[in-house]
Figure 1 (cartoon, rainbow, N blue to C red):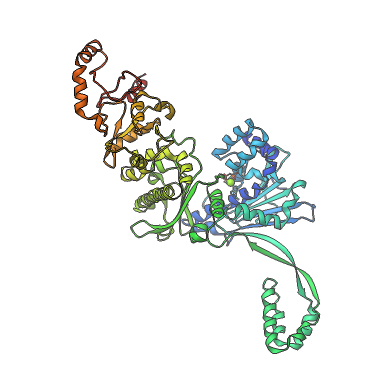
Figure 2: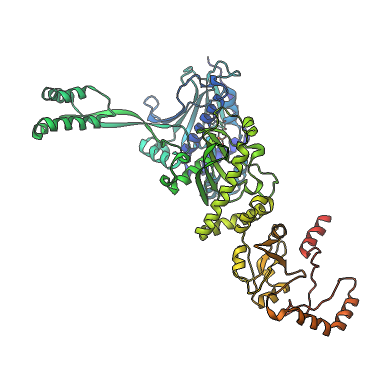
Length: 630
Ligand code: ADP
Ligand code: MG
């Protein structure tokens, strides 16, 4: 008797399974993508472990994924079997990995899915992916047989089975009665639901794999197919043999795969030897079933290909599969580079369609989307201290280095200059890519700017080396238009204008800033004023101080200069003299509030304004200071 263990699902898993089974019906296709991506993860883990421990490779020679769909004559069920030769799972791992929720995103998915209606859940699955449990979209029973790779902790690998059916809230784990049939890795058998029988069709599977999964695996994916083929009947073939020795010898090879080629050879040879007519006798044909493992994914990984040969769709599919983000990226940049100390690499940088909600909440970047490979082998997605600077931490990157030894560990990587240099190159290339889009595709840049404008300003503040390039990418609304760059502002300056005018008031809409008394005079005279309502804006100008030698001038502060002739100092001095008694009286009356009272040319409709001293705090910063005190 085989000892069986029966377990209850962890409560979150039970909830997730229920949601998956009940409400994602119209997105069932994703099950295959999820299972293939798990197989790929398991193969990547194996290959990474093998770099330091060759023993894990024992048990199965090839590293691949195989998929076979068939009708089981014994129980009449349609089945799909997905097998990988990856790292595998021990009995404990089958229990914990498939019976509990390890994924951080999944609990978030759960709460969102449960609070939304069924129709909405469909979009959620795209955003989150639900992993292994998506099996239950198409299967009413799932068996997972697995042999974990040999290691010090697992010296004698044994094959175990995890089995679970969709109606029950329990699963079982037990030693596989078949013994160790896998050698190493995992075999997932889906017992298809009656309404999911379409998935047993290899054409359907081929189409699905090509649509969703051709980039989900860096390892070969083979699909088992059976095709019927018409081949010449034996009898006819032997009568052929009498007329031509060449054709007789080719008929002897029975490989069904290369049949077509052989026919071509036969014809060619006969053409030469005899008049065609004699070949046109009736050849008797018969049907044979040819079994074949057909490779589903392309030969070379996407990043190794020439960018000119890669379509937008391929870049997007690769992005979805690699980063599990099912929204389209806004842009990407595919290039080969060099760290400067002789390590060449290939990379693709992706700009996601949105910033993570937590981006502005955490001070240190914690990106897990910098995938570093060495010669096609995945090494790490955690660069530790050498991760990208905060402002650029949202990019998703694939890097494959050519000239590093394969057995590098993260520690040795950090001790080399490689990561530091790589980081520099990636940041530089990202800025280059953004600049190119800005210059060549304004529409696309507008989309990027909508998401990343504040990020670019943060970059200009943080990254002094790249400050000017990043500041060039920043956009600001003005009293005259929706937005402009700093260069655009200067192009639009009035004759004689010597300052860049701005008004900063954190948290204010541009519309409200435009109505400010400080802006009105400049507006009336045809000057453009940058309206800075974003949290980083004021720090941005304080760091830059000037742009192309034009100093920034806060219009709410003293020091405003105009270029027009009627503003010359003489006029102002004359006016000050004329109104001296009034000014003196006002100054005396308001001595507790203001430092000085002067004649101003900055107002149109309002009769007076209180402004901050040139070297004093602006109202905005005072607001920040007083709020931080309580
Ligand atoms: P995720 O892949 O996001 O971690 P899944 O639900 O897809 O979530 O898988 C859960 C866990 O089960 C994986 O993290 C992995 O540890 C394990 N697992 C799933 N499929 C396989 C497999 N084919 N080989 C080895 N382990 C697997
Ligand atoms: Mg997964």
